Length: 207
Ligand SMILES: CC(C)(COP(=O)(O)OP(=O)(O)OC[C@H]1O[C@@H](n2cnc3c(N)ncnc32)[C@H](O)[C@@H]1OP(=O)(O)O)[C@@H](O)C(=O)NCCC(=O)NCCS
Image (tube, rainbow, N blue to C red; front, side, top):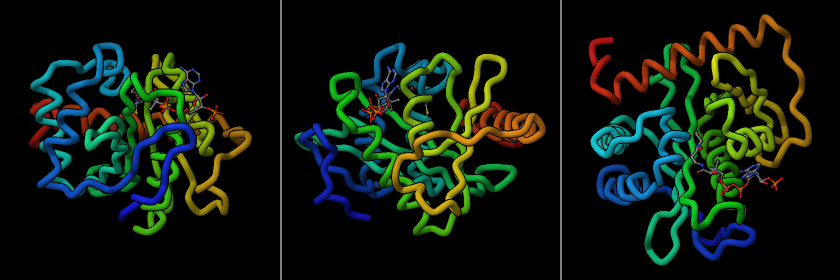
């Protein structure tokens, strides 16, 4: 999907989907430019270059859709839409990264909006996001788009229901969830997320 004509509110770049194989280096180099704290936030503690290289390579080969924010031909932000087959409960995982130099200019929000449009086009019913419980920026961004976040053991996870009518636009307030729903979401998220991380690390290829 091409979003060349769509520009973030206060950023000057453009947004479009990367072609999977050919443009892998653009995603990889963007992720490698993330500073230590951002890598920690994005990969939940995994920060070494070799992990990031393997991660980007895997994204290029497993059907992950990458929506990228470009400035001067360089990818400065990315939204990842992982295919449902990667998740044990078939709920697609999503993730975001924006380089520090272009943050708080609406890039993350624009990427989120485009990712939801892409997910709708693919017919997905819901999305899952996981982040550190202390990650105020990601929590703010996810909540803005209707994620119902729950917290446990230093992590928060959110589920976005795409069957609701207004998910392409920010949701004003996240609806409360019952304790049972929250517990189920956490269990599902942890299983799916750690399975993916272990696969990235080469620990869980047989899983
Ligand atoms: C999370 C991240 C993607 C946000 O990107 P961004 O381009 O700065 O996001 P936006 O400018 O669109 O801001 C989105 C909302 O979050 C809020 N926000 C952004 N940074 C914030 C912060 N540090 N604290 C509190 N709120 C914050 C903004 O105010 C905005 O809300 P508003 O539109 O109501 O004003 C970026 O900080 C990042 O890449 N962090 C490192 C990687 C990471 O943590 N990824 C999450 C794991 S999936």
